Length: 197
Image 1 (tube, rainbow, N blue to C red):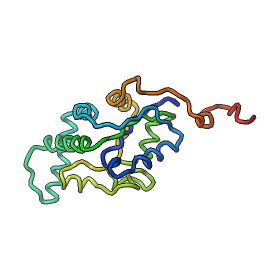
Image 2: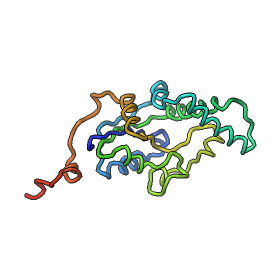
Image 3: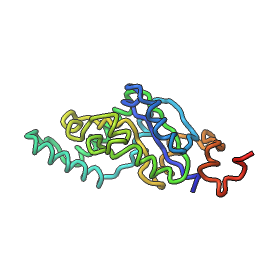
Image 4: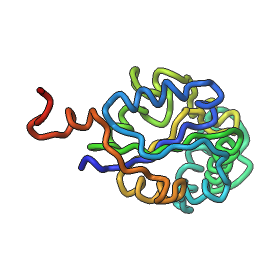
């Protein structure tokens, strides 16, 4: 259980707003450890694989966009599925606009803990104390009205199976470093042997 891994990507808005240190600090201080990290320009083909959406997802998300456009009195100019694909296109445009910082976090319940720290996808509905709740103010409504991706600072894997699929898209196996942190002893050692001299 202590070897569970999750993928985190600091998005272009996190890099451009100089929030990298704060984001990493919030995750690292839990006791989870970084086992891989790099700064890079994301490749479009990697992002299409990363987001891994199908026509059902495009249609469902597009239907929401259509409903929002009607509610706001905006014209509906294409099929819902195309609006859904536009969401992903806008996200890829956003993710390739500036460097990103992908990293792999490891530790007990890494996926769930990081997800809790990051907060829900829309900053408006993210709790105070989360990265998205504290550090940004974007909304789905504003992003949709501007035909752009939600600027929510960070991507994190939603579940273990997703992390297992995503990590190899961003890191070679050789880039993941196996090591022990001193604080792992206090977090995971059963009887705390050797703490006293």
